[in-house]
Image 1 (cartoon, rainbow, N blue to C red):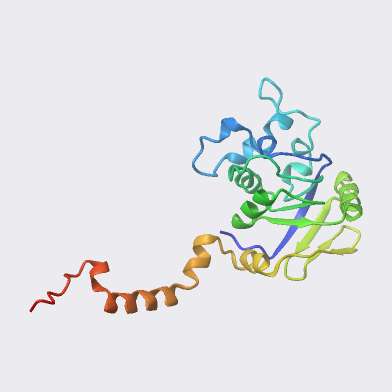
Image 2 (cartoon, rainbow, N blue to C red; image 1 turned 30 degrees about the vertical axis):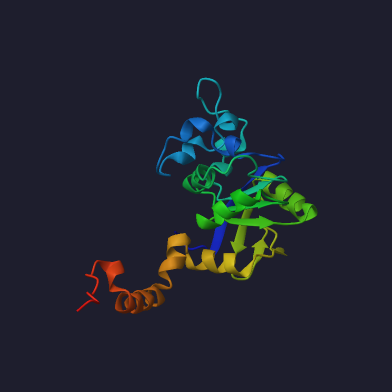
Amino acid sequence: MRTFTTLSGPAAPLPMINVDTDQIIPKQYLTAITRAGLGKGLFHDFRYDMEDRERPDFVLNREPWNEACILIAGENFGCGSSREHAPWALEDFGIRCVIAPGFADIFFNNCVKNGILLIALPEDNVNTLMADAENPQACRMRVDLEAQTIMRASGETVGFEIEPFRKHRLLEGLDDIGITMARAAEIDAFEARQKAAQPWLYGADIPDSAG
């Protein structure tokens, strides 16, 4: 998993509430077993018409937002099913940070495990950032995870809170496997002790106690 330290670039506005995971990445993309290429399907029904042509009025099809790395969204973003393809599609498109008043819990955790920072802010703050994002002259933002700040194009900063362990995971680029492997020395020491005390668990012959 990629580390997340700072992120700078255009923020795209998506002023919609209750955007569910089927809207983020619809079911026809769920047969994919890798994340490569899923960015094309991100917000498919919003981005494309019935002939699979780009809708020129959708924000991610327009400059500068077609290169957005930050998304400003409405309340309860990521509700619906638990499909991990949703954060995969965001990440493959290039969006590594979503800012909204609130998120669905499973989606929130899936994003952290895939290196995407989700920032929950009061609605007034989100509205301010949404207005910035809607202005192509003011949509560039800088997110600093270590400092826990969002810098607007005006130079003003907005602070945010994040649970310390989630912050650690993102800064260090640790998915679930990475968290386990960070304790590899302890795991090896445990296995060595267990192998000495219970060798049959590792395929050794059981001693004949009858002599």
